[in-house]
Amino acid sequence: MGLRRGCDGIINFRQGSKVKSHNEAEDREKKNKGDRVLIMVLLHIFLMVYSVGGILSKLAAAKPFMSTAFICLYLGEILLLAFYAVGWQQFIKRMPLSFAYANKAVTIVWGFIWGVLLFHEQISPGRLAGCILVIAGVIVYGFEDGKESGHG
Image 1 (cartoon, rainbow, N blue to C red):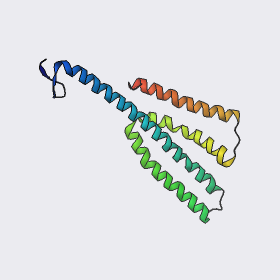
Image 2: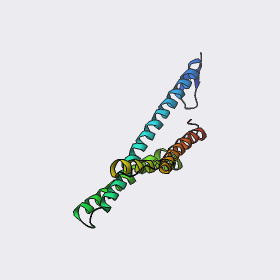
Image 3: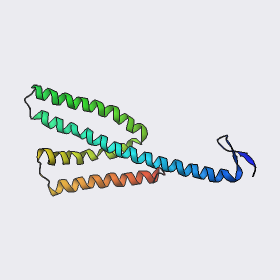
Image 4: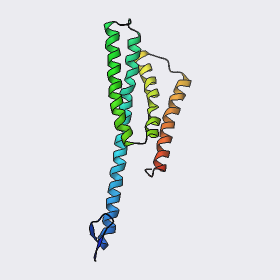
């Protein structure tokens, strides 16, 4: 039971260092996995909020050009886009750009949901199949990204 200097320069007991390092690595991996899940949930909430810009845009389009309602809705959309620009930077700082862009495809699904709920647009089998394909694509891409980066 002698002392040895680890790669990180910290002196550990020989017998305990493997267990401690293994447990630390395991704990770090659990924390990283939890952080990734949290970031993914926040990303999808963020993309849902971003999709509200489509609602504001559609509502503004129904108002007379340059009316007070048109200007307020249009300004709301601009403010939402400014919020989105800042928030998007924070997400792409924490995940690969290709992965973030693949998840951005869910805004199509949100647009579909908003159209049905708020504007009573029709659900066609083709549109429904398209939304299912988008969701499936994001899921498959996410699993493949985790495998390639060693996160899955």
